[in-house]
Length: 367
Image (cartoon, rainbow, N blue to C red; front, side):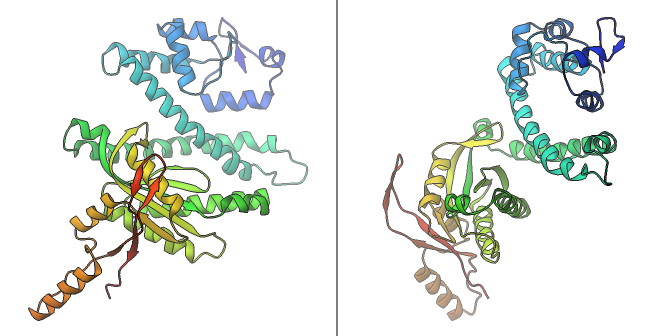
């Protein structure tokens, strides 16, 4: 239901606009407020210019609606809050737009997933003769407060973890340009699969891959940056954590007969972080290494290998490990225990990055 300028309710406006009545009811339920303002009225009520309001709305991913009366008190409050942060000097205008954009992009994907996958299944008519529209509204009404609380909980948890990483940074520059281990995991032959599999089967395979990868990355101390269907990008604060994730991904996928082979490429170095994503030469190198990695194998760059050696997660060579073991045995001591093995591969030119020397990462038998 919508409202006119006086605030009195009317169904005529929604009917005249040709919009679905259920869609309007759902919008009112989810937003918790009725349509009251045009964009110009909302901007004026919030005390911001129409130009700035438009920048905020577009950054959040909302379409231009002309001067239709489609905005609520919540839209005015959101504008007022963002503008207030700028006026107080807590955020620059550019940063406020970035906040709007990052929040909009993240929540848009979440909302699409919940509607397409979650609610679609729940709103299947429970009895013959019932329509989906007859069950959608009460289901959303029940779920909305619970999902809202859960979203805030997860966001606070993630914010606490991210803030902890920032305050532990060595200096201000490291907050943005940090040394991280970055890994790409890529399904081999995915393009061929798209030509052979039905859309539903392909969707299930991608969802299973993304779910498995996300769980393994999180459980082993990494951070999932993004998924790209047949590829996932993750990061970790140290090379040892990233290496463990990569090998667990390979091992887990290898035991799943429904999954194609996997290959992983990783690099270690300075990474620029923006809006939850990562950029820079280190990221590009990890991507290139993925494209040349053998099936069910992990390739790392020289900096990554050197970091594993520095932290004593891997020996400089198997010959050196054997010498250390022999010397320890002679002295009656326990030999060093290394989690990973490194084998230098052939040097080769990589487009845009010059000549690189990949290293094959393996898990050492420590039994």
